[in-house]
Image (cartoon, rainbow, N blue to C red):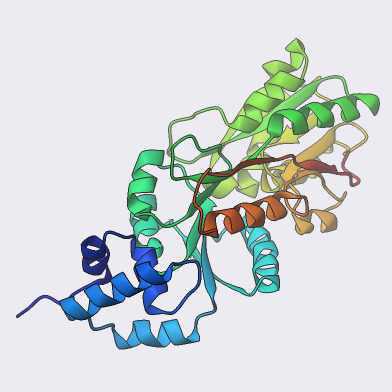
Length: 329
C-alpha cells in the first residue's frame, strides 16, 4: 500500500517549514505569493490529500492559533495565567489551545504542536537545541528562562530585582530575620531555584542559610505546612518567611494556625505568584505577584514578534514581579 503524502513531505520538497506549508494551504497571511505558489505546486505534484479532520479544522480556525503549554493543570498558577492569556488572545482575534506536558516529553509535545499551530509558548526545561529542532521552524517562546539558542524567543522573570525590592520594603516594616521555603519536586535531584538565588542575594548573611527545601508533588500546600514546622524548629528567631509559591505559603499559614504562631504579629508571611485565592485566606496572603503584572503583556508582545514575517532578531524580555500587599505581611 502506498504511503500517504504528509505535510512534512511537502515541506521537505519545497524547502520550507511545516508552518509555511500550513499557511500556504489555508490562505493565511505572512507568506509571499511566490512561496505559496511553490508549496501548492509541490503539494499537487506529490498528490497530497489533506485529512477530513484537518480540512474542517482549517476552515473553522481563526487566523492565528497559539499553543500554550503548562507544567501541570493541578497548579492554580497556570490556570490563572492561562485565563489572562486567553483574554489577551481573544482581544487580538487569536485562537489558543492549552496543553500540559505531564504525560509527554517536552520535545515530543513541541514537535506535535508545531505542525498544528502558528506559535508555541510555555514553560519548558528541555535542552534548547533539542527544542529548536523539535519546533522545525515554528515560532517558539519559552517562559521563565532567558533563551540563548538561535531559534528561541523568551520571557524571563527578574527575581533579583523583585526580591531586592521586597526585602527592602519588609525591612522598612520591621523585618530582621528572614527565611525561605524552597520547592523541590518529589523524587527529583535538588537544584537551587532562581528564586532561592535571588533571595540569597537580597537578605543578610544571617538569613542566607535559613532555607528549608520542601519536597512534595506540585508545590503542594502540604509541602508548605511541613516546611514551616521544620523552619520554626531550626530557625525559631525567624520573623519573616518567604515561600517559593503561594501554595507553599498557604501551607505555611495553615501550620502557623495549628502551632499558634501569629501571622503577621509574630511572623510575616509572603508567597510568590499573586493567586486570587490568596485574597480569601485568613489573613489574606501577601505575594510577590507574577499574575496581574506586565508579565502577560510581555508574553503577548513576544508572541506578536515571533509571528512576524521577519523572524530575526529573536526577542528576549524580562518582567519584574511586584508586591501585592495583603494582611499576612
